[in-house]
Image 1 (tube, one colour):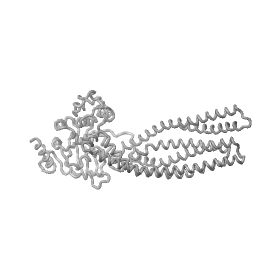
Image 2 (image 1 turned 30 degrees about the horizontal axis):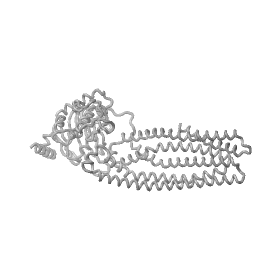
Image 3 (image 1 turned 60 degrees about the horizontal axis):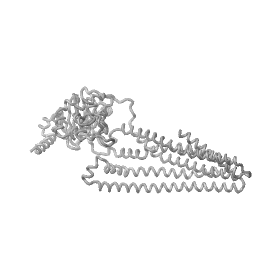
Image 4 (image 1 turned 135 degrees about the horizontal axis):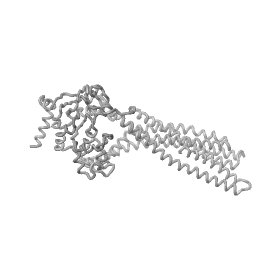
Length: 562
């Protein structure tokens, strides 16, 4: 459709030149013929109307094209972000590249498409106008074509400058966007007011604004200079062409009607050449951003045709001599860790903050791949993708989906029968949450996308546990599953945890050591290493770190009761 409009526009432009010449010949004819003049003027009006309407039609067609290309580009970006390894998100470089692609590369495919369409239309217009000029005054054509050389050179300089600007400005752009979220969004509003942080955050936001504006101001001045130089080159060439037309007219080489038609053709050809070189400049400017987008696309592993199936756990899952280091960190978060979770067994991880508990939980959940060591399932070495297919997880920073209660739960396993929701609601204790909602499990939660119900932290946590249970897997990872629950709710949950798990193996992480007493085996982590393991009673008798931490918590609890 867009290409056909370009063809019609080019033919209409040629018709404008032809109709203009007919009208001028009728005007300057020795014996003026009203019929010829009327035909010429009507033809000129019709051609001008068609030519003008093509611009409007093309702009609307390009609007539709832009949306389709934007959707396609976002599909590619999301394919990367959903398939890339989780460890990439721990890298500042990945976050910066993602932000740069989102801010700059998303619009570039549309710019390339419109530039290609523009170039093809402009090229067609150049050819048609060149034919008209060759028929009237061939000497004008090389003069006009010479104007293209400085335009090409300046567009190359502009494209390099634009990518350099985008790369330099992305840091302040990201910082400013983050500060805006802190100052404007609901999750941060209460603390911002409680600690009166709005003033320092606003100052930092203004400073980021100033830095970005300074970079932008220099870039705008540079682009304006390139634009002025390009305009001067085109203007000088156009003036030269008009002077040649006057010279040809004065020497009797062309008639007055031909001079008028030539002037119109020169003006139209100049416009087509300007459009052509502008489109060429857009292509050159977009090239570095598209290369950046391609490098980002290359981060995603090849898409598998079929996801691995969930495995039943027949004997045990083992983490064997695993070492893991975060990007840009010299000290490993885990070092030589070995741990086993047997079928139907509840294993607990304990340790002080920063000991590596959540990192190890993410390896057991298949979210991180170890740098050294291996993970085995029933004796077979498997990778993270196979682990993820066979494990269900409730993470410490679980997602609060802005969806209905039912959708919040069933999203963990879309293929499972949704009628099973009532079972997991009861098992997790989330049925008490649903009872108090007007529409039950079909109540919309959250207030970011709709006027839904915002649950308390503990209620959200119950929903997250229900979501984990709905994904019916033989191994469950529960990272601080009771962090937002009050003591009574926590006690009730752990009292029924074996019934809730219904024979599933589980890895349990909790800072409250009274809650992990029920575990069949407890591993104690310190500085990324397993320093002890055993039952609660065994660890207390050894009087090591576990006994120390347990004693401190028990003493605090008893003191609070007194």
